[in-house]
Image 1 (cartoon, rainbow, N blue to C red):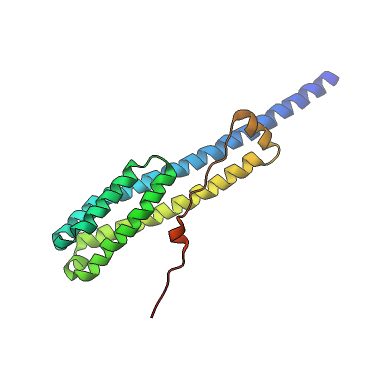
Image 2 (cartoon, helix red, strand yellow):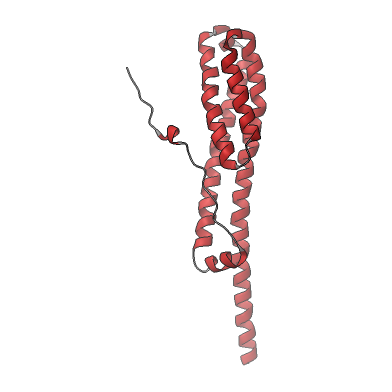
Length: 182
């Protein structure tokens, strides 16, 4: 009888250990999945930009510097290595794209161009998807980090080398409230 009780206790411990380990793997993999989703959306966005630039070129020939800057910043997003570097480069690209969108106000023919309107809408939709993916990533990182820091999972995390993940950070410039003047 004692032997059966000991075997049952060992079995419960092994099952609990395996369950906690598997949940840590699940949290980590979900965070990686959301990281990948950010990459997918940034890639989609950078793929749309050459079409936007070509459309604008036909209407705003003397805005070459603005368009060249957009292309350069797009390449920075494509060439960034870490997720945070990609996000930082994408934030810079967002600022440059705002200038391109502002060009539409100066060129009514461009603003009326159906292709330009569709590209702007696609970029806007993609930006929403990027924002959602960033939020989902940070939420999952929070869940994962909490899981590896709480007892008894912290013991299992330490044994198996689970490390904390970093949240995506917003640049200080974007944290400042815009100044509205009338």
